[in-house]
Amino acid sequence: MSDILDSMRRVLVPIHKEGYPFILIALFATVLLAWLWSPLGWIGAILTVWVCYFFRDPPRVTPLREGLVVSPADGRVSLITTAVPPAELDLPPEPMTRISVFMNVFDCHVNRSPVTGRIAQILYTPGLFLNAELDKASEDNERNALVIETANTKIGVVQIAGLVARRIVSFVKVGDSLSTGERFGLIRFGSRLDIYVPLSAQVLVGLGQTAVAGETVLADLTAGEPARQYRVG
Image (tube, rainbow, N blue to C red; front, side, top):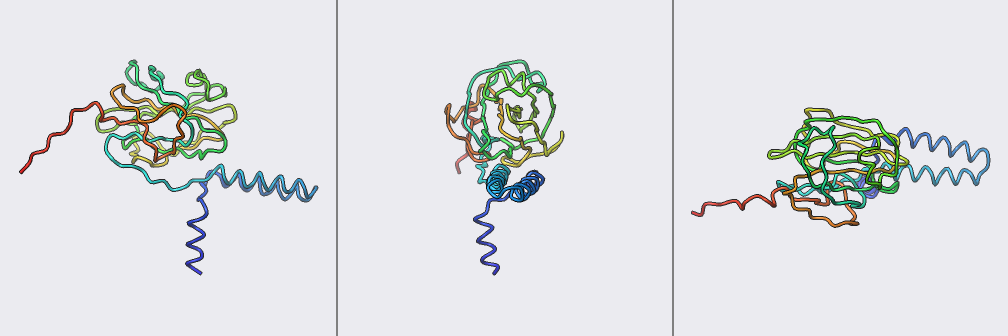
């Protein structure tokens, strides 16, 4: 019996606890719809399955080499550009490389830390709910901005609400330490993340590429550093 249960756990993708209330609501709606008219019950069942799928939280294998910046979100790399980070990040008002990852309603929405470091700042900014793919969403949309301080630099991560998204959930607070790939938040339902890295970082993804949170390497912070010297003998 234990072997069967272990096999089921390996096949079934874990669901994040943030999704439990929505799954219960969907189940209740399914029962009610089925009681009213059985075909509506099937529609409710499909909706319930989708809610479970949306809140999935699969394990990820994170590359751990120092200096790598991994994607904080599942989705499509929608923009790679040079931009001054938002004022709320309180970073120097100098251009940085901005990599945007757009999440549609079918992507996993659990966000993971792109680097190992300490959270130096978190600031939530109310705003609009424009299409998250629009460039002006970085300034106009509701968002949650984090500054993560690594051993050598600071990077910015901004969770941006989208056209459908109405809730940004944070699991962390200022002063917390995060490992690369560790969960730090979640957005419901469809949105975007902007990642700000120094211009010296080497970007390792292409526009339109599909990124996997905690696994896909977006950039290398050590690319501009001189090669390390090792003593022989």
